[in-house]
Image 1 (cartoon, rainbow, N blue to C red):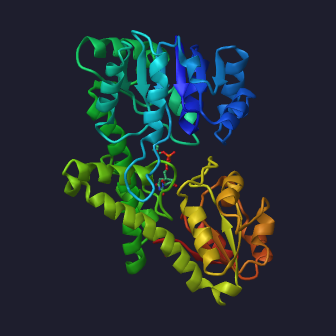
Image 2 (cartoon, rainbow, N blue to C red):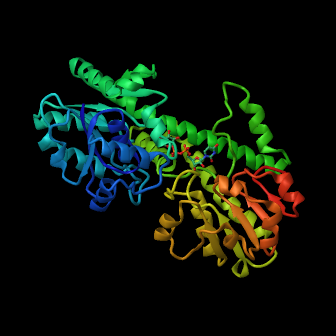
Image 3 (cartoon, helix red, strand yellow):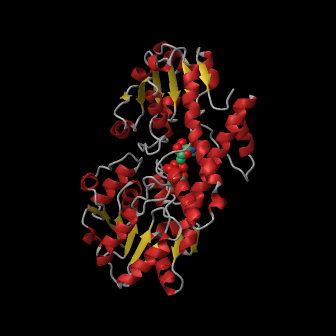
Length: 437
Ligand code: UDX
């Protein structure tokens, strides 16, 4: 099937490559010429495990090409919209500028029977509005909303083998045609018996934001419990293990730490709150403000723990920060708690040296005031305290005995509760976790 993918960021570049890998004939389109140049050269403009491999093989097969020219979308039967919906400046709402611009630029190239498929995360009500815009254009194209649930770091696997598919379609025949086309696009997932929910636009849009709201709530719940654990001497990891054995609760997303970040969870819960307020139902999701507040508090907590642990004023201390990306297997530092902690400590006058296997380049662009090192050894050398804020395997594997010989003072703040506390203490370290005695 001929497919166009508008927007080649974390979502679109992976989607375009994965669709070509599955046998479709795909053109990826983006207004960022540099990004398109890199993709066309077979080099993803960001780190995503498995993407270079499928990008190279799909391009070699001749089924994948990239362009900055939206006219190249003409002739495709299905047009995926995968542009960003960041947080609007000065507001909690989502900025739909890119989605609106993508649709407007696509309109002149649509033909009767084409299906436009929204994948971007949007406030509920957006699809109905866009469907009217497409209908008014008179092209005969229709719209479906097909939210994307991929996790960065596992994006290729999540796209090729999603755990569920959701189609939000128009009522009647148009919706049936849209469903049939999408079933063709996702033929391999269909063959693998992937659960499919065919629904209306509003439900499809809400599925995505409510899934992210639930995940964010789960993380903030365990972080709130970790605050209580700190105040009472309980152990949050054992608590999470114990409640996680209840299948109704489940152990996943119950890791207490410096909190969630990235390009989705933080801005999605804020946009959800803003949209609910517009709908006159702000009280229904008012708890998400608390979820956000608990989450942001974890960053302050890690900073405060560091200040308290230091044996000297912070402005005279060297602090080693292990981690910059918002989670392992990613170079994404958008709303990263790790980078935020590093920046806050620097702001307080600490000499911050930070390292990360993938996140340095993006961090340097945003915060050139920090000192970055690609060497864990260099980062640790003469440190007055070490703060671990992203649980990369490279950091978990650090030998506490040899690390103790590098630092000036062996203090570690484990902002992800990921290290073996007993082993670090046995090597002479003052080990401090979050809700972990
Ligand atoms: C998320 C959703 O998981 C995905 O379905 C959606 O499509 C996009 O948003 P992603 O942003 O890639 O994906 O990251 P995710 O793996 O969900 O992690 C989000 C944040 O939560 C990270 O900062 C992570 O460190 C943090 N987290 C996760 C915790 O603090 N504790 C946990 O137990 C799990």
